[in-house]
Length: 485
Image 1 (cartoon, rainbow, N blue to C red):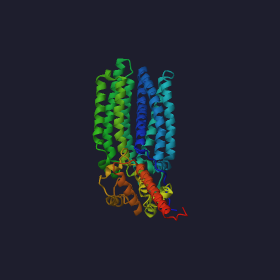
Image 2 (spheres, rainbow, N blue to C red):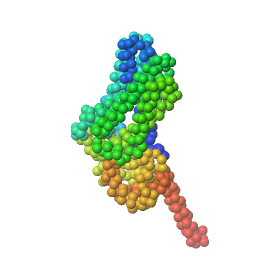
Image 3 (cartoon, one colour):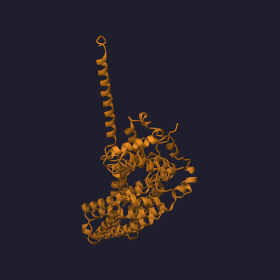
Image 4 (tube, helix red, strand yellow):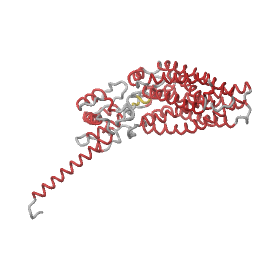
């Protein structure tokens, strides 16, 4: 039987699975990046405290560490499993491909994360209970463990864009998948922006310092750290663009929202102005203002960056062999993986998908809209919302007066052939092309909630059948002989 390894599609009405993942991931990245940057800052401050015999620096580390325990290692640790759950449900093939390639490396990352968690508790609760040199060693171990988690995760993220070496497709292997130019350039870029986040969040801790001179000193330290890291990160981003595939640059030029460039420049400008203001007037750093600016700078800065990173991978979700809609679109001999496209070209997605409802496996006049909706959900909903809102609503891509004939030409000439560089190839039988086209034309009338129209059509068909049956029964009754009545 021609079945391929696909899973049921997860779709949140009016939102879409992509937005759910994005909301969880943005908060998690904020927490995790702040943690790693702070860990390396702590190593520097503890070394300075040891050399200069300064208890005030250790007290600052303690207060910042306590903030991290609540913010990062509680809230951030909750969103971590949230990412695992949401991405596994939304993209099981994508997550599966990452686990198959990096299972032991991910296990190593969890070991380093445990060291992080233990380390931050030791940093906070051992201030004043151990000598400064011992405390410095603890913070250094904490910083090294945090950097190790960063390096591992960035290597996996880089693989999602492109395997480290082209030979991975033929030979497989962790080293071929992990070590690429993009991995290390992206690591440097993220370190820079991590220090920016650390400096911004550190302003909340600085706001609570009572000693005016020490507050001024720490405001200046964090201000310079923030300015230098922000400018360095912006420069490193340009270097990073030289390490991504040409297809990613094509996506950036054509598919990123218009607000991406201006928003990034705006956030960079606001960030630098904020740090300059806090260095000039440390009294401005009060908890309410510092907290507000942390939210504004970090969320508005992270959101477009995460949108860009996710978009630049298209049409792939992992390793340039798993499409964003979960279809395996390329042979990978080194991993024993076969493309699923030949099967789809032969039997169609409705017959090949193991979870297709029995009544939709063959398209007919009675189920055409429902079959089209199902195909749309499988092929499109990971990147496009069938409703009015959510991620990239489908109805925005077609003219209001689009006809069935024109839609079929588009589907057959573009989607089934993969002629759009940033969209997956979606093989379909002629009957499936007709079904998805009928659904898209209907859905284009304002972006109806995906399931509503199909349900309504089914209800109308049942009502029509009931009326026809009643009419037949009535006619039969009228024509029966009197004795039969």
